[in-house]
Length: 243
Length: 191
Image (cartoon, rainbow over all chains, first blue to last red; front, side):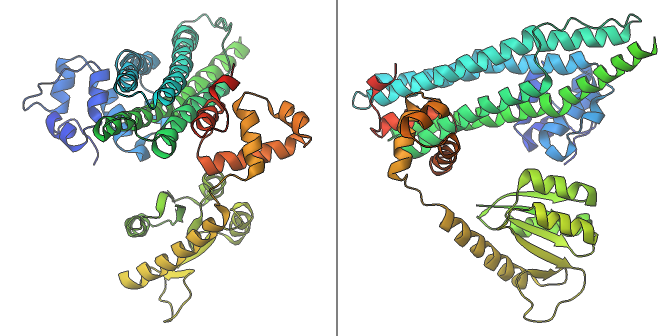
């Protein structure tokens, strides 16, 4: 289904509940009543076109194509990604950690296992946080500066200190994905369930959901944002050469 | 689990085939390619186990190139836009085939893929692999392991690949957790 402006927002969300995440990250509150997507976007000062592009890319991977995002200011995409970061760091990851910790209280036979798992997960959180920090402290500011420079007439190269190349970022994404993948394998294949199945399953569901979400997130960065940045870099380069 | 590529210029036929193959549990992931130029790069990156290719879709040279880059054991199935004689082999399907015939053919193909992968997957680690895992889990690098066990770094790497494939664990910290859970090393072994 292609999402369009004249559909009712509530129908869109009911059709694909995953889109709730998109709506939340664009700071659109619930309580849509009978309003259409267009009306809801207008009320909340969200660009309709931008919403449709993000929502459709999220809903149907075939739609995702960085060329379609050329017309939007790159800071909109960055703001969206940063809102997603907040959601992971402030809520999703602490929630998984809390669940693992809870297991600690309920069992003693497997205590060693739980400690091991917590350790492993904490290591993952550290890796994840430092990745996000680097994005927010050096990659995103670099991109914003790049876009400012392109808008102005002053084509000096942006400060590019401590910024790894885009391809290194790609590597880092995959290492973060691998750790989460391993956590899942260990839980499913090798760890005897320490507590009531229901709690344990809940944890596994949460990890799967986080993994899926992070994959979508990485896809937006790697297949939309980075190609756009490469285009911007090329544009700057050719403008500098012209002078 | 099998990965599949459908190379077909007709949107409707590609989607029809997709909905059919998705009914099989063994089919893990499907990619559809509509453009001849994309075909080789998709196959290279996705490394499918089964390739469904319309005979009118690829030029001969692309076909040759594709046969070279696909996985050795991958099965190529040709899609014909014309009717096929009764008893045509499973690697040939026609867009005019009935649902039963198509299901039968795909069933045979997927069984063959399953047999192939069964041969590759002996799940248990060999004693040698356990030794290597032990060293990896306590945090030695490939080079250190090679020196300690008198084998080449290359062999260490190939052991590690097999370990990862068998256990489904990719990172060193994940392997450490596995090794402790299975008493291959003790908690005290890691500093």
